[in-house]
Each structure stands twice: as structure tokens, then as C-alpha cells.
Length: 328
Image (cartoon, rainbow, N blue to C red; front, side, top):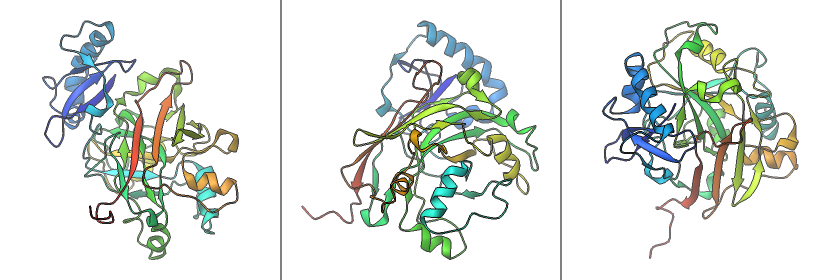
């Protein structure tokens, strides 16, 4: 299934289904009012949602209308938790090298994770608002949305908790991060709200491309229409989503609706290109040139078998923070 959240005037929007080809939409708030509600009641609503989804794909769902990404909020406009991991070693190695930092201990066997902002997730077409002095960068990622996950869940049992997959832009403010990390207390200013593609999908939508709790798909990243890279997600991914969930639940449970990311999509083969600007400029041995007001970033993931867009497109303009704009 493909699910989304339509703008409704309410903070959490209204639950909808989107056809497999991203052409038609139907509201299903009669089954569950919001995506969060659906995840919390997944066992009770999944069959009804699946039946409506099949009707939508056949063109027989009453009340369907044309898909327009601008009508969507993030699938979860606010989430109880956002956990991100360093799942791609090529990305971690390049990032550490760029700031002359060593790799963390046990990096080969233990994912590095942090807990970020989740109470104000951006929609796919929302602007990136900030100060160019902050070093604004994009980062393309895949993440999963889980149901309730018990304390100390094993990698073997974790896949059963995965409900949906999402695509996001995990925006980073690069020039703020080093000073924050130097304090030994992690990210805060350097990690503002992330933006999410309009559509969340159940793992079965990927078919054989859902392999070992990894999503294999091609992620295309552009800045101002120029392709920065098309790396393959799932390939060169050191830690699966199941392994990240196992690591995260060593000392805590995860509430239904928690989002768990696998880190910036990255391949060891630089010919695949990159999912952030720092990696691109590191490959050129040049100081990075970050995003500026007026720039536009697009991120989209495509199936490796049929080439179809999976989640819809993240399409964001960069805008100067209003407190920095010159008075009229």
C-alpha cells in the first residue's frame, strides 16, 4: 500500500491512500483519521485499507482525485520519536575525513545513532529556511515507521514491527555541527526539521527489492536541476533497519509511529554520485559549497525493476530566514 497525509487544516492532517502509479488519491479517514491512528490500530485497519487500495488501483474507489504533492503534509507531520543511524560506512568515512575526525570505536559492528527533531516534520514541498552562514546541506535517506517495539527486541524479531518506509531530506547545518559535537552532547542546532516525501509505502510494495530489512532502490538527488548522484539504497548499507532497531531497543522500547532512519544513502563507488554536498566536494578535494537562497533541491527514489517513483518527489526551495531578510 501507499499511504499519505492530506492537508486538512488540522495539525495531523487526514489519512489517504495513493495509487501505485502516484496518479490518484482517495481519503480513507473513515477507516482511520490519521496515519498515526492507523499505525496504532494496524491489526484492525490493515485489511480495510488494503481493500480500498486495491479498488483505487483498479479505478473503482469512489471519491478519488488527482495526485498533487502540494496537497500533502509529511506522512507523519509530527512523530513521537525520530532515531537516525549511520548505516552507510562510505558516508561515515567521508564525513569523518572531511572534518579530520576518527571513526568511532566498534563502527564495524555497532551503528552510531542519535535522536533528533520529530515534532514538526516538513512536507515535501516546504521551503528550507535558514542562514547561508550555517552551511545548509541536504541528506537523502530512507527510514521505516514502526509499530510498538518492545524493550530488547532482537534483529530476528524486529522486521515484524516495521509498518512503512519513507524517503526524507535530513537537512544538516554543517557549519554548526562541529562545535556542537565538540561539546560531547550531540546534535541540536545542526539538525533542524527533516522533510519527507509525500508517500509512505508498505515494504511489500518493493517486492524483491525489500531484502533483509533493507530497501534496494535508486535515489536521485538534484540541485538546481543538476544531478548530484543516483546511489543505490540498500547496497553498501552496513546495518539493516532490523539491526538498527535491535540496537535502539537495548535500553528502551519504541512507541508506535517512531521513525527509524538508516543514514545518508551512500555507495563506496563514487561513480554513483552522492546524497549530500559534503560528500560531493570531498570527492573533488574542494571546500564544500553549500545551499544558498534561491537554490532548489529534489530527491526521488525509483524502483530498480520498473523505474517507477516509489514515494513521490521531495522538491524544496531554499529561502533566507525571515529575520535576515532586508526590510521592504
